[in-house]
Length: 333
Image 1 (cartoon, rainbow, N blue to C red):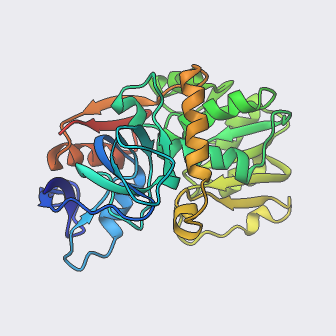
Image 2 (image 1 turned 45 degrees about the vertical axis):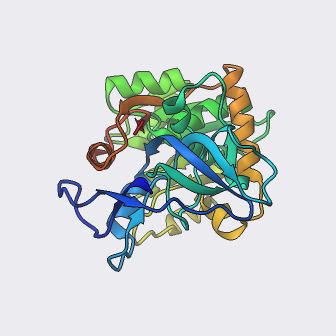
């Protein structure tokens, strides 16, 4: 048996039953799966969304889409890792998550843990690294020779922190403008690589124009509702937006006159629709090399523990307030 943190009902975070401690059987390893002994997990907005929206029908649901741990066993068809390897990964929302002592994960979604990081530091990185990497490479298709200006909204958040770092290293000629409202979040965004940091409260377009008078070429948007007119005003003709949120009733016609492009970035697309793709494995290994080469750093800012329903409820409450800088990680059992 193993301990897990899960839920059976969609309840508010202040209800003690919104996340519960349960014991379940350890899953059996088959195919290309790895059985991973989880050492640390981090909490993301997707955990909150799934806790509140996923249909449960009274069945136990296990969240957790960021983790670091040790390979306990490998399936008969697995060949990328061996027992004892230290790994980090985000996994798939179609399977039970990492808020468990042991988790089954397809090896093609797993990367080797950066050597210089501890478990919590490593667990802070997979989901945001994948999201940021796919934004830079798959959506905006930026190269080392790319110039122009990118606006990173919510620059002190988990994904914003990684996007600033990866874009700064990958595109040295790209000017990065981050948004943040508090002094501590503005300082953090600058540390992560923003050339300029502006306040996203008030007139966002005017604030951006003050540091980028000619406008911007790219916008990364985790908070799209109510911002499309500002994006349309500040973007140059032919500019691009990549969004990761779920704005209801989105009307993008305001983007038409400048022929602006809207991209969706959802890092679980590959695990869901291209399960044989090794892109996540490959890019996590590259990020690990960058970390070990001290080109990028973990965005861990808050440690909780041990892994339990009580600690997880605390982390979910912080995530719901959207005020956290960097990432919150829960470690140990």
